[in-house]
Image (spheres, helix red, strand yellow):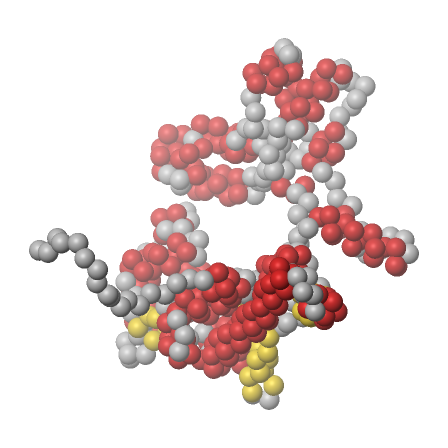
Length: 442
């Protein structure tokens, strides 16, 4: 082994990730809203870049309020249609409105307000009696009494410290005659949730049918009494591409309306391009190159997106012509090879992007499914197998539910689909369907 010091020439190949390449990759996976926010930030940095906002605006509360004020000023007065959904009441307002202010002392009202502020979004009490008493310098008995008052308000189940307490409060309020349900929830809550009904039936000397009736009754209660007061606005999905079917032909186009329009600030460029200041000229040159790069990257993003969507349309014609049940197995690797691009490029292109089709709006990622072999050496998608599993379970005899092995054998014998028991169990879990023992009815 030669350990002598010396100088040698060596040729190597390396791929350096420049800042432009890194940003181009990021642009490819941006959603319309993320791209809009990126361009607005770039417009602040680059005076040569001018943008005209599209339909999608960045989530900036200050800008949103100013836009609304301007809109009202132009229209003249309030827009009553826009305010229909804003007449909602908060959980605190709902609870306070039920209190008899003359009946309770100022100290008790102060404690009740404090307890209300310690309710989470589900309406559960997240604090403790001792903590509240210490914070308010109040008597713990007074705090406990105030909590009982709060628990007696509507909606039933409010201010319970856990799911079990929430359900007990609802049973006590609305179903005081249902003694068995109260006893099971109070003493056998874990066993009931885990469907260990034989243990409960043996302990209480009742039938499995009675335990099942209690379980069905509990299912009708509200586990999130505070949830109905959440003032969440409806979010809308804006498709990045549109696929239409006209006279049997599939038409693909991008939906560019949400994106802001970019223009070049010609007057600014002319004003400073003739200056003799080298720093200003260098700054102007850098910003001009940055503007050109952004235009090129956005166009490349658009071309890559349309190529991927067109390839999806080419490989899934029956899906768009007849419906989702005709989805064929397709992987990102297949699309990448046919388009002569890297698989990661396809993955970034379809990230959080949607396409509008005759059957509805779908996430682009949902078109890529794994392949399941059949007896006749054809293949179907994992989505089709999941649908077949859910249909089998939906039609099964609930007193004798199908096991995962039964489902696997039925798929093989009746539909020619070869899947293992473990695959059935995995797909069933992904569909949120419990095992056969937990689906059984008595």
